[in-house]
Length: 262
Length: 251
Image (cartoon, rainbow over all chains, first blue to last red; front, side, top):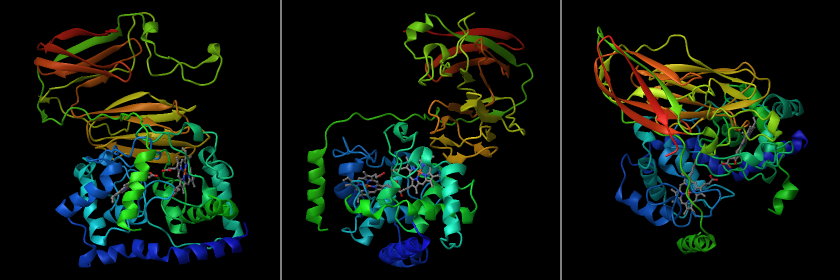
């Protein structure tokens, strides 16, 4: 794909995702405002909301074993280990409240986890302490500070070529994600998550990134890794610029023609 | 989406769902943390011993090879159960004193123990350490690896690594932690973290030794990744060496 097309595409996404970024990046200052306050303790509202809307899948005790979970794949998250996939914090760290809020509000594409925007903001915020109360990890550890997202570089042809080189040679993403990014690399078939369930490396051609489809979000996914899954963090191996190039390359694997039918 | 639609969505899913078993989790938290006081051990005793298997190991029904698609003669033995043909001694069993509340000083090694990923396996396979110890995980191969742990109290990690990378990680809580590489499924190691300095791991003939134990009666515990736990009460006498044996059997 030509860089210009990619730029256009990214521009388009940014437009559609403006709302999401707005929420994601304004969470911190908004925290100061009263309405964005996450309750410090489990409240009645939180318990009720969880029981009514979340427990059918995530289970009464948050073990991901609700009555609907049985043959579902991917499984509803088991909250007991504190392993959250979509974070702004480094590998292995617990998520920040903002990260959890983002997932609840936007859902997880390609799974049964819908965007819970039918719930009020207050309800969505109130379940956060409930989710955390399911894991001992939140008693022992604190979330690390978020990783730094460096200044975005331009997706030039040279940069995308560098991204390709990282994908194919330096970090060998293809071993899991496949050369064309279809999630069918040689190691793909045997992947398992930390809970012992089979998991498929993401198919980039679909473009429906679970953790969000903006360049910032894609950048964050391989910088932080997806906790509880084989998807590692590559924070230690790449400079900031290399990471943007890898982001653009990964996004250039999206096949819009095919995505339409999916 | 209206609330009704949401509930319908959920109902629909419930109709779709069949039945599937629930899977366990592979990292266990060791017994609750204990008080441990450092004292000067003057008339300490030692315990030496051996861990072995009584029955015919072939009958255990374990596949002792890494499940690589190689012909029988060139298969590489798995590290999950290594035993000596001479005395049936089992390698890589950790031995520790479960209920000790006071004893010798906890010495955290200043030179970090190393786990090296070489030829797609982790060396050594079992690394017992004291809480507070930092381990250096090295990457000795040319290809990509990742190092992935599933611990709960100690912060887990999953990092992609390349040639010559060296990652230092500190472990602060007692826990049995599996370290693995998702690109080489049969590569894994165990980091076993203890909160007192009385532990060892058996050598290739199943031998171990634990020294300078204040006299008294203690519960000794052994752990092996496939064979599980065994416990034994042992009395340690001043300035004496007591010899004990742990025997795994099929029943």
